Structure formats: structure tokens, C-alpha cells
Length: 283
Image 1 (cartoon, helix red, strand yellow):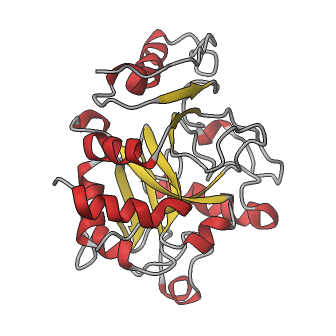
Image 2 (image 1 turned 90 degrees about the vertical axis):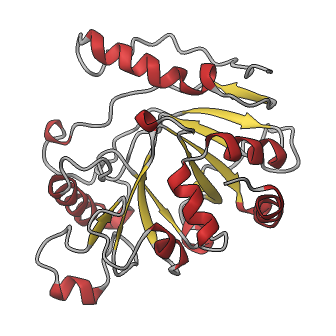
């Protein structure tokens, strides 16, 4: 088996933002090593330096909501060489719950807007990228621009209402079933949460039963809802008639997900990716 070319080195003290808690440092090291030591497939890739893994922001330490944007440390990223490598990684490491939902939805994809490619990139085509340790920005002022104050207030309330859930705004990322909506945030890419066969690092998902964006919520929902988490479905719990497969089928629908690592594949490769999944997919 070929080992990842893990060229990135992170010497920062992982406990610097969480005090001197040694256990926090050990947990961070374990999370950072998830891909660089445990990837059970043969692929060619290059890891690029990020800021390592940091604890998710603690909302009660942020103080009052302001319009000032708070800079976040960049995640660690690992470039793959081809869509073929991405398909191999999906087959071996993609979260099984998510994978089943994608297949059952007739290969509907979930997208995020990713940072644009570096001008120094030698590749003529955008490449699939593994993203590890990305900090959530939903409860951080400045994320939603001019609407940031209202948005961050909403997401902090929702985070409190979802306390104890495995996914919430404080530890999750928003994705959408619409490439157009994803493009408003960056270069659209399909996302594939990675957890392999380990239940300890499985991904989690949340979405509103009636679909649509988390923020701003549809007017009809705003008029009738009694709480910010009314209609929220988490991992199929209290799901009623809507599950993750149904959520993927909805147009312009946002899904909140939490995962330690995910694969992002530029939307330019959607057709080739779907063909590869249909021809070689193993459930």
C-alpha cells in the first residue's frame, strides 16, 4: 500500500487555544493524524500546510454579537491526482450513511463553495481535495456579510437549541443541493464526508423537514414556527417522512453536516464522477 505524501508539518501547540489541557492536545493530534496515517487506499496526493486542528469556537466566550469578522485558522488540505483517486477514496472511506443516501437519491450530490484555485497551481484542471479539521464559521460574526448580525444571532440560538446533538451550527458546515447556491460562496464542489467503517468518526447530518435554507428561513416557516429548531431532523431521529435521501432530492436545500474530514470534488467533474459511481459502485 502506498502511503500518503504527507508533506505538511504542523508544529503549533495544539493546546494553545484550549489552555493547558493535555487531553485536548492528544485529541487534536489524533484527529490530525486521521488521514495521514489511516488511509487504507492507494492514491497519489500531496498534503499542503494548514494550521492543523483546532477546537471549535466556544460560543460562550465570544462575547456580544458584532459585525466584526473573526479570522479562522485554515484547515489541512490534501490534493488528489485524479477523479479516479477520488472514486477509490469514496468507495473506501466515505461515510456509509451518506453514501447510501446518494445512491438511493439517484446520485444527487451535495455541494459547498470552496476557495478558488491558487494561481500558482500547475494543473489545468481543478483537483479533488481532502479537507481535514475545518472550523465551523456559522456562529462567527461576518460570515453572512451585511446580514451577519441577524444570521449569527439565529445560528447561536439554533446551536443552543441543538445542544447535545452530534451536529449543530457550532461544529457543523452548511452544504446545498444547488450548485448555483454553492457558487455564491466559492467554486462549487460536491462534498463527501469521510469516516470509513469506524463509528467513532462517523459524519452527522441535520436539515429542516420542509427544506430550504437555514438562513434566512422561508417566510412560511418564520410565521408558524415556535422555536428555531422546529422541524429540524438529525440523523433520521424523529424524521417522520423525510430522510437524508429525500433531503438530497430537494431543490436548493441546505444540509448541515459535521465530520472531521471530507472530500471536495469540483463540480466540473460531476458527470465523470456520476458515471464512475454508477459503473463501479460497491455498496
